[in-house]
Structure formats: structure tokens, C-alpha cells
Image (cartoon, rainbow, N blue to C red; front, side, top):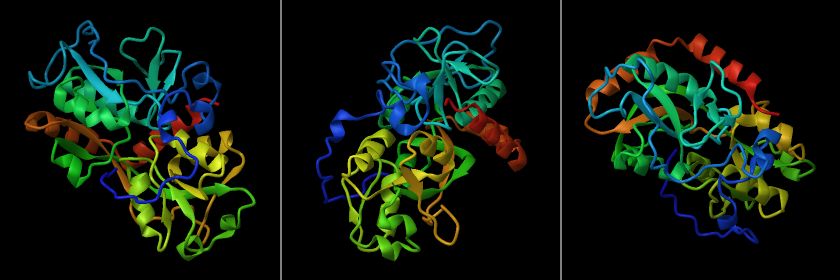
Length: 311
């Protein structure tokens, strides 16, 4: 996901500061498990606590990587299907640091667990705002990012990235009954107000639409969904792979399809793990771990996560 897109248009009537990845699960479609006071898609600032080391975990990773046998994994724990919070521990979860009875599940966790095993470290999720993940890594608050993040040239200036462990794609959601629901090309979106998420490709890709009204991005997916529900925009960008959960909880929205496909933008979204610079030996082990997983197995893991999404 990339940043530094200059947007000159303001979202009419939208107070983006009031909606972050806090307390919005219902908007993003991931069920009651996230709505009670703090949502599944809740994120908090960088934690300063460190999880205790796991019994028997050996640190085969670089001495600068990991925290006494623990691998602190930065993520929102709020971005299904990549990462989301559940209340029951299982073979698919890792604990959320500093929160009793809270566990992280999702596609990122599949690879966080594999990477931790390859490095002899026990992974624990550290909840952070997406925009703070790179800083959390460079400051030493976390050891690795497995949080639905795409390597970009800008981010590579600050941290190193692994090979991708998933490739995502982008499309547009509009309200049912909107004339745009039957659009057949980007030409139909000329003049339409389209909203993305700040500091992500969900915002950057909007510039692929000619003559679009590219609105000032907001801080989260639920803020996007709130905006379109309130009529503050005509369309929002979204991860096509997240359609199941989004549409289940937002039945007033529909996917736009061109020639039968919801994948509308040429930019794709490889998902990469990130680590601090200067750890080439660790990065090699991470890449070896990722590349040992076949594409068929990756798809099987993805499909299994889709079945576990909270309703």
C-alpha cells in the first residue's frame, strides 16, 4: 500500500477524525464479536509491553530480532480476512499482547506462525494503527509486520520486506440502486466522488479513474463505509478478497463489475512481511519459509480463513 497521494477535494460532510479503526466492526461487516464496546476492527497505539517468552522457545534468529523468545507481530487485529480478533484460542490463533482472552486470527497469522516456527520464536500480536506499523518496527516496539501490508518504494526506504505471501486486488463498492451499479467502465465514473483509505493503495488506485472526483482519504475502511452509507461519496474502493464480509454486513452495497469481474484496477496488492533493516539473515529465513508454501496451499489457507470470519 502506498502513500503520498495529493488529494485536493474534501469529503463533503465527513468528519474523518471521528472514525478510525476503533469501534467500527459493524460497519465493516465482521459481526457481533467486534461490536461490543470495541470492535474487531479496533486498533490501538503501539504497546510498550512485551509478552513473556514461551516455554521451550529457542532463539535461532538474529540476536536483534525477537524479544526473549517472543516474536512481536505488528498488525491492527482489525483487518479481516488478513487479521481479526477472536475470544477463543485455537490452533489458528496467536495471543494479543496485553489483552487477556483476546486472540488474533486471519491469513496474516497463518504466516506469522510459520515464520515464528522457522525462527524458533513464539509469535504474539501487537495491536497498532496501520499508519503506525512502520514506525513501530523502526522504533523496536515490534519485530515484524504481518498486517496486510504491501511493500512500496516509499516504505522500502525505512524497512525491508519479504517476498509476498498473498496477492490481493481492488474494486469499487456503490449503493444498490445507484446508476453506477451498472457501470461498464471507468468512463462511467467521470465526476463521481470516490473515497479511499489514507496511506494505502485503496486511495492511490483511485487516480486510475479518468476525471474522477478523488476525495480526501479517511483513516479506515469503516470510515469509508460510513461515508458511502451517509451519502458523502458515490463509491469506495475495497479489497476484492474482503467482499464476503463487507457485503454480508453492508447489504445496501454492491460490487461494481466490468465484464463480469469485480477486479477493476490494474494495481494489485502483494502482501509482504516487514522487518527492520540490517537483518539480512533473518529476511532470508523468512523468505525461505514463505516460498516453501505452494500457491495451492496458500489458497487453501485463504479459503479456510474465509470460513472462520466472524458473522
